[in-house]
Image (cartoon, rainbow, N blue to C red; front, side):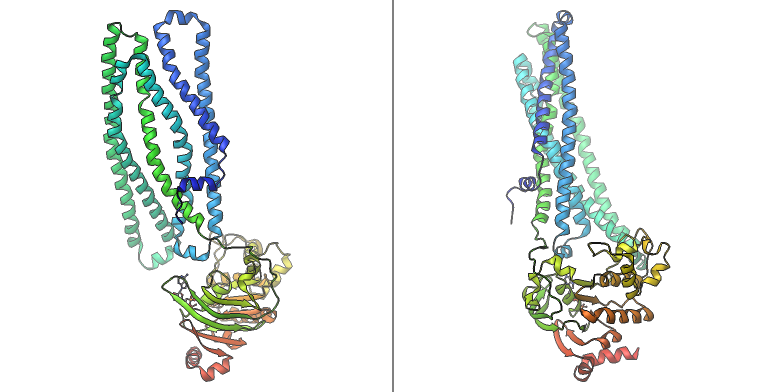
Length: 572
Ligand code: ADP
């Protein structure tokens, strides 16, 4: 759904402390009024110096106004900074909280680098619009029109000459600043791209090295960097024209005012103080014009950023707590005419039906790409089916709240890896409360992890992951198994859980699976013969369709592909 105004939509989404915005704008408006008064004071001081110097009240008021305007200015900067930080904080929190809850399919479609840039850069550009551009709008209008008013009030003839600079400014500076905005937007996009690529390459650094692709990756990043460089040089070229040109415009009109004003002073039409005040007001014209024009270009940029953030915020979240249905103990799990595709062009299942018997070990086997992992992804509700039903007993699995459903579910995924924390908190990661160490040790032993953990420098308190000790693939997998065993889930899903293990650990894990699967429904995606042999039921899936179901002996007798698979493994 397209939002009418994404900036307003977003502003409504977060709670901006309106009183902060109001006071900061108010203070800067008051500051700009003082800014308008100062030239008048100066005029008076120049023209009536001998009298003014005697009038101590006048001096006091003058000093007071200066001091007050500095204090108000300081206060307004403080309030605006506070407001800005507040906006970044709320917006980043809101977007991050939303992203964490989005459906898995969202993460398939969006790269991490891009999401990171949305969270960081887009919130920043919205913040600068709200805290820098909007608040300067009112003061700019006041200073611009106030200065024009006082110029005409002081001497309309000199004022006309002073105002020649405005159309020149508008004709030259505004289009150029538009181009500048576009350039800086492009630079931002290129920077986001390059940071995405760098993050990706770093995460795959071993693959890059092994594939001798260092130069290839360098060249690719280099082309982005070169784009950023050219954009920067273009900005430089424009600046090299704009800065001297605007100084020239300023000098020409200043020269005009000084020449004509000097003539007016000499002819006695205006006083010297008035000329000084006129020049003062003239110098105050350019800044507001630039600020007002940056409001329009800044607004365009903010619309882009807000639109992207609004898009994320309108993405559908997973509903974690839709229902409080209690999870039933030990019932069959059944797929009934399930159809599913990850995206429109890729149908994985059409009308798939089968039953997973309660408290038994069911193995799913079949060629790779046939949909075995997808079945586990659907049971764990990482993805939702498009039609048909998945039932747990008589209820649809979608009738249970997601939190309850996942509490009852263990899922040892392929390469789920470890988190940057201690061994102990890795094992207890999915539990709400940390269990006693005896329990942790018990389940670690069951997953054959205890022995290697005891060899680590601080046993269960050793820091692992990127910032700690690196574990072997098999060790990581066993930790993942321990993490899922300790949950004592009603349904245990294992995806090639033994693929990274040596034969001794594999044997131990097989034993543990046998132990823990006594009172739970266990579904194993298996390639290995040993796993398959122990299963109570085997489902053979080929290209999204079930081509055979039964025990090992039954399939061996009637399923040629299964027989082939077993024979191939025995040959090894
Ligand atoms: P298996 O586990 O049997 O090897 P999968 O269930 O992983 O097979 O994959 C089944 C099909 O779905 C494959 O064609 C695969 O390319 C596709 N697939 C798997 N995951 C995704 C995903 N996240 N997005 C799109 N397609 C996917």
